[in-house]
Image (cartoon, rainbow, N blue to C red):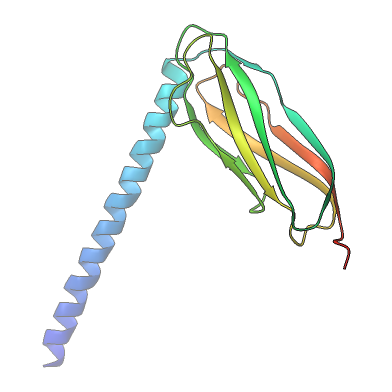
Amino acid sequence: MFNKFLIVGVITFSFFASCDVRKHDKLQTNTQLTQQIEIKDPTIVQIIDSSYNFGKVSEGEIVEYNYRFKNTGTKPLIVTNVSASCGCTVPEKPEQPIQPGETGFIKVKFDSQNRVGNAHKTVTVSSNAAPAFPELLLTGEVVEKKK
């Protein structure tokens, strides 16, 4: 009886382990495709807004800003990923390629809840731009909410 449970357990574990490997392989393949896009079809980007100082806000306010950039190259600009320096800052990338001559936006939301003091947040953008996007900077001061 114990042997049957052992065999079923080993088979179940093997099944889940193989699924994880396939998922890992798929993630590697997606990363490789992204890198190929970045290398194969580079374009040129002009950064219109690379930093934004929101001044002073009260704790708990949400700060929103759209960083602008223009595709000045000859190929579509594909933003593959955007990431922020902390979880309080959420960037959104354009879902569609930015065609040559068009302007695109990276939308950023900063939640100032429990962030009293100077704010210095960065957003990293991955794309097929050459040279690459600089880090986008969001700064300001969060003051304690008056009670």
